[in-house]
Image 1 (spheres, rainbow, N blue to C red):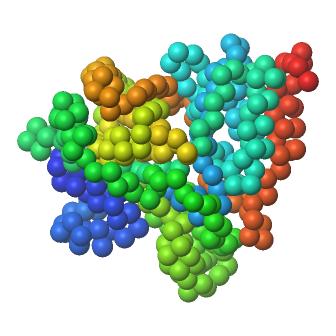
Image 2: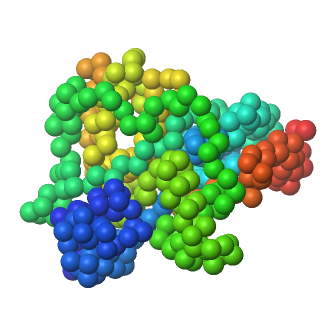
Length: 372
């Protein structure tokens, strides 16, 4: 018989999102659970539900702007386009995507003074003949959605997708967004090289101890603890810890990137706040200087049309102006840590010329007849 999540599991998953995975003793205390029971359940979920953790850096406070890029591949250049997305050193996530057309999706963190260089880089994709309809969306940092108990039926151990209830809820929701979903006034540089190295290691292993970090860097534990507590935590360089697990059967579920547009900020705020406790939302971001948002949505295929029907109802009601989406291809994707190797002496090194050369050489290797 297949393993199933129960309500206690869901409480633990919520707690991990809120408090992080670094201190199981403290988490057990906050959840009022015996420590050994917590550890046993964590081992079970890791084994049967692909439980994983990821450290979410607040890139804004490291002088980095976040950008989503979506491009349609020229037929025959689908794999080439995927590699072209990674020819820029500042990517953190790239995947193939499909829907109306085959293409790629990329997530980047770009030094704030090089936004124009970054846009010029992607302008070349169409000139080189590997992509069309290249779109760049500058975004706030992403707000992870930690709450998982809502819509989970404690009696049956299954999910209840109450779409009509959600539609009624939105107009009654507040309008005060969390700081992660508000356009930042600036992109300050609040970290140093040690901070960036620690963040890189936290991305690789969110549960790594400060003792192990001290050994890794050849520093004292007090030195590393000072940077972790006084810089990374106090200066807001770490936004949260993301918890991912197989809440639905992956064989019959899909991962989407949605773009939602609104005619004013109040409607955007109510809509986004209504999503912060929904189990089908993984992360949210606001598109800078626009009444628009980006959302990572994960749904069983049996519920997808119901979700679209709900969005259609919200559009007719005037809450939502428009929406579109792509389907992320989880079979071909790559992730890397923050580009720590390009942070030197308190600033980011962005080599625009090298990125352009990397791109041109990559495309030439694929097709010697490609445009110069």
